[in-house]
Length: 189
Ligand SMILES: C[S@@+](CC[C@H](N)C(=O)[O-])C[C@H]1O[C@@H](n2cnc3c(N)ncnc32)[C@H](O)[C@@H]1O
Image 1 (cartoon, rainbow, N blue to C red):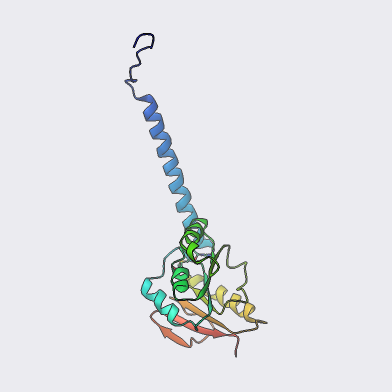
Image 2 (tube, rainbow, N blue to C red):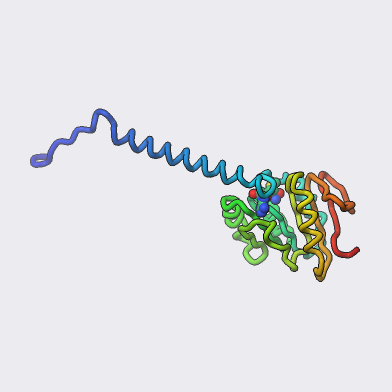
């Protein structure tokens, strides 16, 4: 066409290369941020390791009908969804914003029945509405968890069932031990 300059693609590909480097930089930055986010969790509790579906079913079998369960460190919300499907009310506390967001999306169908809060569970007491707490943390936090639970059951109107996966809670005898779960009852001694 007359009047229009004839544009040749740049032979050195400089623009494309710059965009490529920029995308790579962003990708590496994002990956580093995610690694830091997931890694830093170990300073506050167990890192993200999901409970296996078989163990989730075992947890649900321990719950009294119609009860409310709180998952301390609720990860991607798998247990919350499974609990809701079985007709339980479920609450989750999760410190990792990415996992919190994922679980919010996963649980959106159960709005009202499931609530997930972005928080550090050391700073937030177990809500009074909760009947059972599920926790899958790391051994080094067991003693701190025992102190938190002992302090919080004081003055509670109803007993609290605590189900710990993978480690016993120091200073307590479990009522039940099954499939790696330790089941306790607080508040009616
Ligand atoms: C071992 S994973 C268990 C995840 C989930 N409960 C499950 O069973 O699939 C521990 C979870 O606790 C979260 N977490 C660790 N410390 C926490 C804290 N202080 N407050 C809230 N969440 C915490 C981690 O981000 C992680 O998602």
